[in-house]
Image (tube, rainbow, N blue to C red; front, side):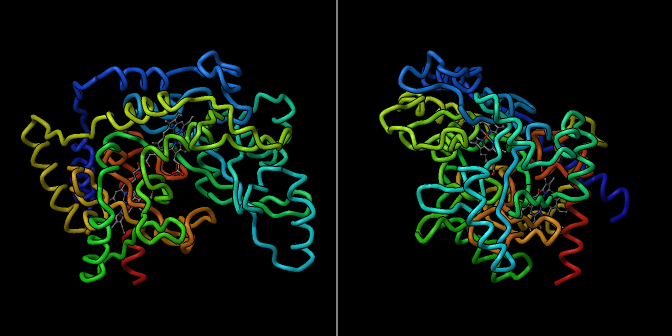
Length: 398
Ligand code: HEC
Ligand code: HEC
């Protein structure tokens, strides 16, 4: 692409940036906001029936990770979440070793339904012995890079899937960048039939081939949230985030296994009650969708217009669809797309490993210096250019 074309495209995408203040701040939303901003503690007084924060957690508040461009925004790379996947054994002796050793390494790999193929490798625990265990999995190299996000970014850019051999078991370490939630209340209401309709249309036109994220065996259920579209509804994502990121157990989702105390907790103890869960969901759903802002300067406005044309000419809009169901200016199709080998990693629904959800506009627009997915692109500009290059590679290959 020529330089001026890149510039127009960039200005168009950046030009979409903007926020609407939504007046409806009812009591529930306000209570949810307090929970979202709250710095949780172990044995927090807000969890009279539970143990509050942790034991396993990645941070101490929702807003610690979701803060760029405003409360509920995306997260910087140093808040990326670490995921460990078990590498399938190649030989029978590796398989035997895996079964023997994996449980003793981290009890989280054994869930109620048996061996889990991947787990979150938490950043923190209320148990002081945990940090030594964590560094065994990541290796000293990564842990020492952690203090310098730029160096870390460069390392992950070269090699986003890192393999580690621990006690004869092969792990793959990957990361997830925290997504923005702006407009998620509208995306939550997109019907499965709408998503299937878009997938069919894409199949007919034959330029891109998205598919709804499958959720287990139930064909009537499709995923809408998460990089891999792994979660059906906003409520499910919120209860999952409470449990996984902060160790806040609710009736819907259990906090994740503490490797130092793996016995499951009694179901009678909840860190969050139903009213707290509902408030948090109401707050997340209330975060306004972005709107397009056309610059006042006529030269820049014309540039945005040209970018908009390029956006559809070079097929960005095939995946980043402007409107989907009730979500206007969403710039997503909520479908999974094959992003190629470079983006492939072992964690996700039962699909080839390189399928990713085309992310919504809030992510495209809300964050001028956002980094993509693992944190590959350093600025918003490089994200757009990386993406255009990746698209060109895929088009050449097909
Ligand atoms: C340690 C960082 C971290 C913390 C703390 C955190 N999140 Fe997240 N959040 C993430 C990451 C990473 C993702 C993307 C996960 C994925 O797609 O696999 C995410 C995604 C989400 C999404 C889905 C967005 C989308 O459009 O797909 C919601 C909703 C969400 N988080 C809510 C919360 C809530 C509520 C809390 C507090 C209880 C919270 N998060 C705390 C890191 C965090
Ligand atoms: C085949 C579908 C598809 C097409 C076509 C496509 N994208 Fe994307 N795009 C995605 C997916 C999936 C992601 C999320 C995974 C990732 O980060 O790469 C994404 C991510 C992005 C991001 C990352 C934003 C962030 O915050 O991480 C930007 C910016 C972007 N696309 C812009 C573009 C532009 C500009 C074009 C046209 C040149 C384009 N996309 C074409 C599917 C597509």
